[in-house]
Length: 326
Image (cartoon, rainbow, N blue to C red; front, side, top):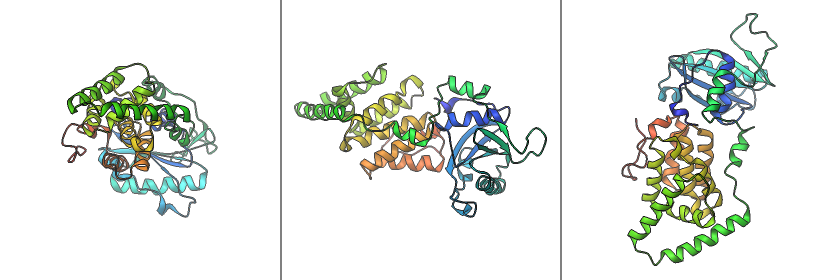
């Protein structure tokens, strides 16, 4: 979903609560979610795990820096979980948001299909909470734009799980064959084939078979070709994102080739608003290649809360000096 270009107007708590899982990509549990607002519109969404108990709030991450980077002027705090720890986390977070100039307009708790206001004591918000609807006008708009929510965080990680052994073996054989064939090509011919592979599959409506997966995976190992793919993703054309392609290629490659593909997959996810999937992809890239610089840089940017729109120069300049926009 191209959430970086979406304008989401919130008309009440249920609009927000039904939309947040679609923005995160999964249904949170035992979590603190801080929604950043700008002029009453949703600007950004950040989630962290709650600590183990209400006595350990010092372990709860402060998200005020992320809201500052996204130029927010207000916030909403949502906590997911049992009352004692959730309410302690909401109070802790609200204190810091107030001090940083992002005063929460509401504190909400969600548990077992019900939502509770921690600020409203009126008859409209009874102590036993209210049923949480499955959808709202806002969540329907986000769903139409392509948003969806997995059951939990583990389901996001599963999207990047290795392909079946037989298919991975077929791709490995295709990689070996391609390396033998490529040894006979000069630099210009090889570069032309690599660019053709990226263009062909970014424009395709289907996913590649083993030989083509090998071609794309090997092509991304060239930093110039990788950056070409990033520029195409960065073009702003949603249809050119092809996150499904980058995930597909990543799942079929062995560890020696997976870092560039996983990084491109993470970049595509990050650029178009899926921070959780982006983080999983960067972690996969760094597990395979701990010193892969672009993955390190993008993970640091994501964890700092740098907005996706600030990535517009990635892949377009000197890759040794590449940086996100201020």
